[in-house]
Length: 339
Ligand SMILES: Cc1cc2nc3c(=O)[nH]c(=O)nc-3n(C[C@H](O)[C@H](O)[C@H](O)COP(=O)(O)O)c2cc1C
Image 1: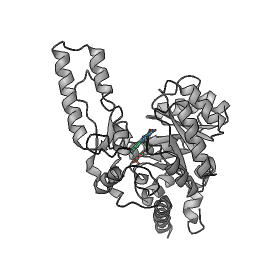
Image 2: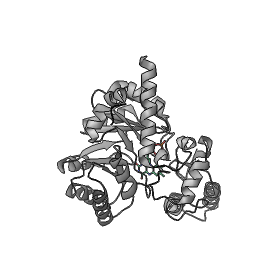
Image 3: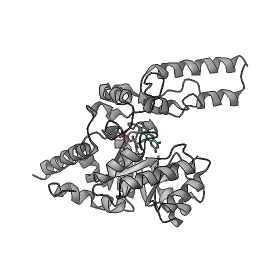
Image 4: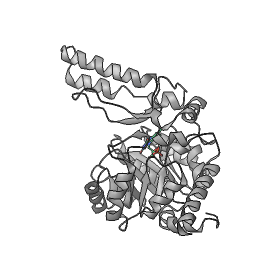
């Protein structure tokens, strides 16, 4: 980071040293969005990019990492979803490329995954939904944690970022680097979490409209138009049919999802469908929906995953400008407090 930000550099040193980046700002992995172009741009600009593996096969991940390495010599990470059927093969692909940081998302890592990543030479980051879970992950050997609140875009838990940060940082921040995610749109909030003991932050929504991001123009336009209250969590309407909450901009598919739940519940009541099949129909409703919106630009029938910070996304601009703005805002906030 450049010298004009001495206070921010000091507070970010631990996180930046851990990541090997100039600033301790991670761009959270976003399926279809966080691919070679955005990831390399973030890392080249001094932040820390993370490839979203999502449902990629090991061969596709291998190619994506190789392509990213061709665009940057700076460190970047890879996000793997714990329930991926080929998780071990994906971990081995990361090791083959000497990826320095693997972020495990999507629930408690299966036995052996953490050890396998560490044996391959990478550091492991996980998302603890609660404090006891965080302590369990620390005992399992994770190297850093990302605390993500319900303001975030994509799959979310029930508790806000500010409450999770207050609950967890005083208990665990001395033991290992902790990054805060969810609802961060400006540098003042970054400064606040750093002062509370965070080693750094992770942002997703704020980077979607980066010039370097390959998301379809319609997807970016929807972000630029939206305000915080448009980014709503999906709602479960029948206790028999579980819905994992996802925060996304409301569109036609949000309404249709509610109608689909009603239709499946009625079919269940009338004995026209078995429970397992009914649950599968709900689970599969969103399959392919994020790709439809991000890549094809179908912003009505695709999924517009976005966090509440979307209201602070006002234009398309290069990654370097987004980072410079966040850094300047954070430094100014810290300077005001110490004057
Ligand atoms: C479009 C989109 C896709 C996402 N996909 C993933 C994903 O595949 N894996 C993951 O761990 N998090 C995913 N996330 C969460 C981000 O990595 C990040 O933690 C989150 O966006 C931070 O909150 P913010 O959006 O308020 O900045 C996604 C978020 C968005 C907006």
